[in-house]
Amino acid sequence: MNPSVQWITLLWMLFSGAAMGVAFDSYRVLAGQLHFPRWSKHALDFLYWVAAALFIFRMLYVTNNGQLRFYVFVGLFIGVWIYFLLWSVITQRFVVMLIQAAKGLLSILYKLFRMLIWNPVRGILMILLGLLRFLWKFLLSLLRLVLKCLMPFWRLLKWMLKPITSRLKLPAWCKLVADKVIKAWKRWF
Image 1 (cartoon, one colour):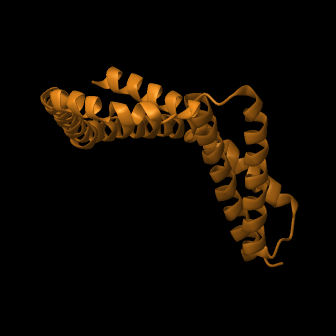
Image 2 (cartoon, one colour):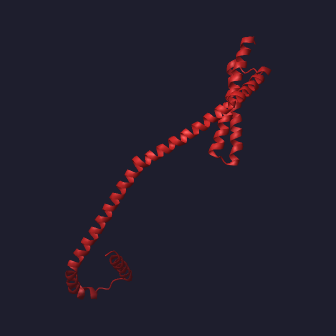
Image 3 (spheres, helix red, strand yellow):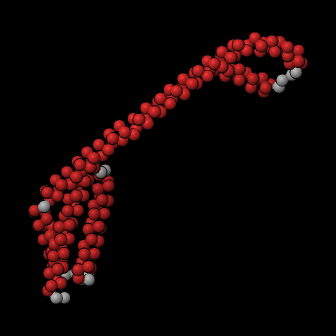
């Protein structure tokens, strides 16, 4: 392996170490802000290290066909170390700022959704429900009025059919159904 490939590999490992630091700080701040359960932190740590290892080996494979040498570890260590000395605090503050901006944006979108979509739809539904209630009460009162007007005719018809109905024997289940219908009728009207 020639020295130019070794220097390129070293620079890529410096970059990869810094990228691991950025990912670690971002993950750590997100885990703190989003309050993950304690049991999930171990799984998330494991996923971070698996992703970091895959990223490092991919970079190593791209730069020098996957040859693992001592300077690869030196490059990773120096990259992480320089990142934590120079950029860690800035990255953490930036991630916190992004989280706050995302929360603010979601809050604005939620308020806009409630104001522009939910409240008008709810108002329209309440108006329609009020109209339906009014229409239902109007129809019930109209039906009561019609029934009161027809009550004398019903009594006359009942009196005229009494000789026929007295000779007919209705089964017991018909009387039960008729009683339930009458109770429901009286409850509604």
